[in-house]
Amino acid sequence: SFASRAGIKMMGSASVEVWQSVAADVENLRLALNWPFRALATETAQQHRAIDNQYLIIGALGDFWESRFRTEILQVFVAIVECDNERRPTRERASALSSAGFMEWSLHHFAEARRYLEESLAIAEQIGDQLMVAWALSHLGWNADFVGDYDAAQALGQRSLAIGRSLGDQGRYVVGQSLSFLGDIPYSRGDLLEARRLYEEAVVFLRDIKEVNRLTYPVRRLGYVSLHEGNISAALDCFSESLELNRQVGHLLGMVACIAGLAASHLEAGNLETSATLYTWVEAQLRRIGAPFFFIDTAEYQRGLLRLKQAIGPANLEQASAQARELALEDAIQLGQAR
Image (tube, rainbow, N blue to C red; front, side, top):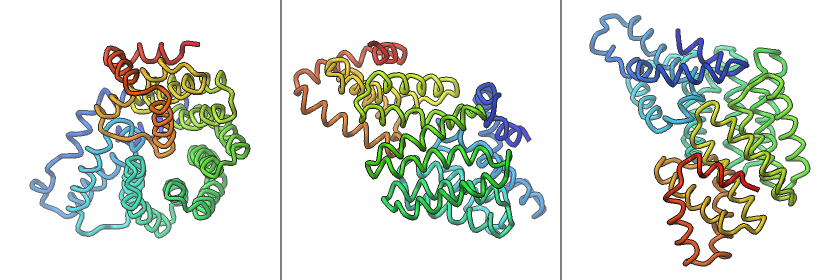
C-alpha cells in the first residue's frame, strides 16, 4: 500500500518529499521484497497475493530503485520471477517488467531490457491497460534509439506519446518522458535544432506538471546541446539546474553526470586544469558506484575524457588526479560551477 501510494506521488508537486520518505523506509521495502512467503504460505491464493505485492513494490517504485539500487533490485526481481511458475498476466507483473526493463536499459543491457519490455507490453495489451502500454512503448523506444534503430525508436515514441495524450492527466508523466527521449533521436543523428526543440518542449511540459525527476534529463541534454552550439554559459546553467534537481530527489549518479557536463563545459572554455580535476573526480565516482551513466551521458563523458587526455598530457592528468582525490561532492560542485 505504501509503495503504491508513493509511486503515484513521486510524479508530481510533492515528489521531493515522497522520494525522501521512500528512502527513509527502504529497509522495510527490502524486507517485503525478500519476505519468505513461499515457505509459509499454504494456499495458492496467498502466494499469488504475495508475488503480486512484490511485483508492485518493484513496479511502482521503479524510478527510485533505478536511482540507487539497480543491480540489487534486478537480482531480487529475477528471484521472484523464478518462483512465479504460473506467470499470470497481471498488471503488477507488467509494471515490474517495465521497471526492470528500464533499469536494464540504464545499465546498457539492451537485449535484456528489450526482452522484459516486450513482455510487459504484451501483458498490458492483453489486459487492456493503456497507461502500461504507453510506458512500455516509451521504454522500448529509448532502448531502440540507443542501439541505433532510430526509425523504430521514432515509431515507438510517437505511439507512446499519442496514447499518453489520449489519457489526459493520467498519461501526462509518460508524455513528458516520451518527449524527452524523442529529443535523443535527432540528437544522436546530429540534428541539434530539432533536438533542442523537443528537449525544450519536454522541459516546459515537465515544469508545468512539476515532475522533478524526469525534468533532470532534458535539462541536462540541453546543456550538451548548448555546448555543441558554443554557448558555454547556457551549458553551465543547464548542468547546474539539472544537478540541483537530481540533488532534490537524491539521485547521486545523476548529480555525477551533471558534474561530467560541467567538466565538459570547462574543457570547451579552455580551463584544462579545472576540467581535468573534474573528469578524474567523475571517473573515481563511477568506479565507486559501479554503474554507468545513461547511454548518451556515457558517450559524451567518454568523448570529453578522450579530448582532455589528448590536450593535457599524462603528467598534468596525474596531478589533476591527485587534486581530485581530495574533493568531496560539494567541492566538486563548487569547482564545476565556478565561472
